[in-house]
Amino acid sequence: MGSILIKDTTREERIRILNRSLGQCGGGCENCSSCWLGGGSIDGIYQDYIDGKREIADINRDYSRRHAGLQKG
Image 1: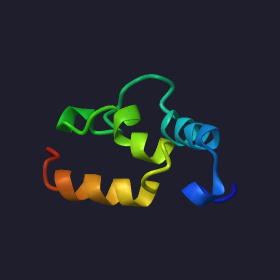
Image 2: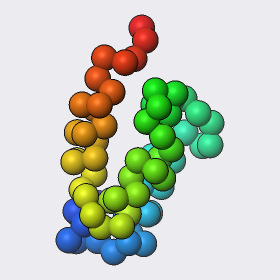
Image 3: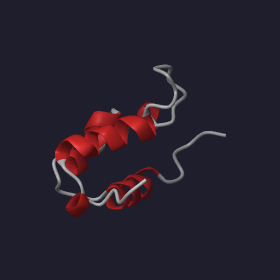
Image 4: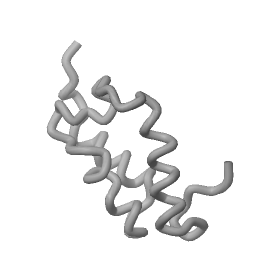
């Protein structure tokens, strides 16, 4: 696998990267995107990456900061 950085990918490639990375559950929800925590849909969470505005690592870091400690268990 090559680079997933915005500077190294096209919009179409970024969509494929997300689909490949996050679509592993086969359509069933196992709370992997933490939608149940109010995080939103995968498309919504990563739209800035798709649009070339923010890297995945930055989005994940901000998401974790906002939702840290909210998981039950």
